[in-house]
Image 1 (cartoon, rainbow, N blue to C red):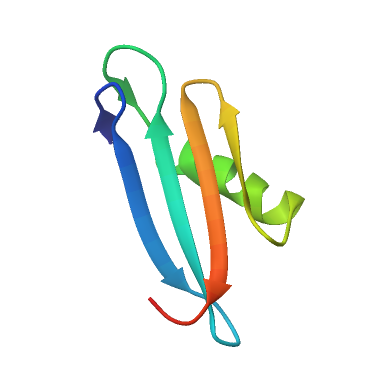
Image 2: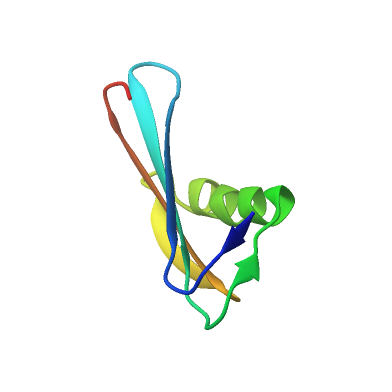
Length: 73
């Protein structure tokens, strides 16, 4: 979808074995930008694959963060 400057999108998903994943995407460039499903998934997957404890990284116009924790959404 389209996101204005500084917009944040969040989602919580349940994983396996009592683990939940909190996902965050923040638009960090000026003006309204489009974030497609593939670009969003690629950015978030990098945070999961690169560190099992999650992480936060900026790629282009977006800041991606994944925070895994015990429990359910």
